Length: 133
Image (cartoon, rainbow, N blue to C red; front, side):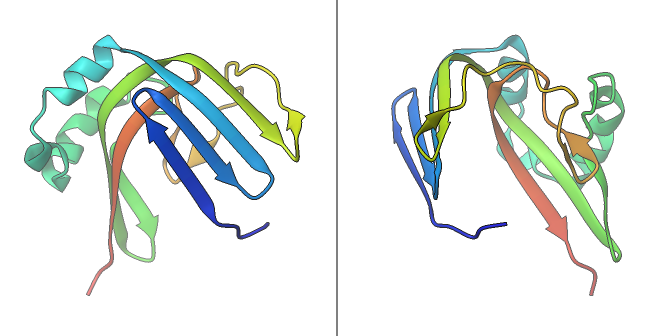
């Protein structure tokens, strides 16, 4: 593992990320129907743990999606996806070598109790971890 500075540059729908040897560029496409639904929920409600518990059951209908769980050592964790866009274009490089076109993630990487969407997309997420005491 390397700990490196991360630089993110955004110009409208175009994003660039540089982190050590990694370079990523993407262009957000259209908002997805799910993104429109996520965006319709007011932020103060969408980021509350009660809302995350309420939406966790229907969220489980999507493969690997969870909105509420535990993070170990008595910590509670919840996610609020706030918007979602398809990708119009994307590419990445490692130490100057092209990593090729993006494709489905199989198996999808897991983060805590949830995982990423299989299709590459851009998702705005608020993640909260509550530490006891």
